[in-house]
Length: 67
Figure 1 (cartoon, one colour):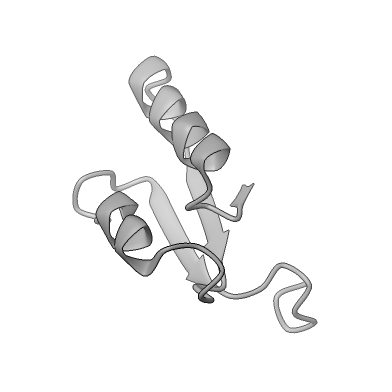
Figure 2 (cartoon, one colour):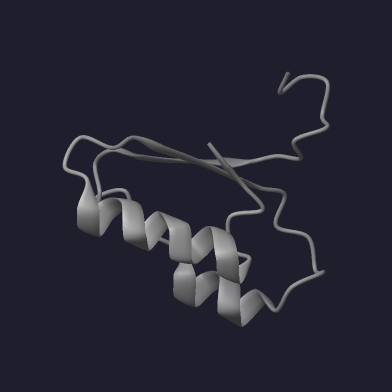
């Protein structure tokens, strides 16, 4: 699971995992607030069709319904 998915470190980790491991499942979490540049988030968003083992959840990791 990668929290704060669109942050540089998390995004780089996701890219590294897909390039180096064949059977990786990535669950990315981001609440999509305005703290980081929206254009950057859009540019980094991975379409599920590009990586079938990618799951994106638009939520906050502290949200009680998520836990």
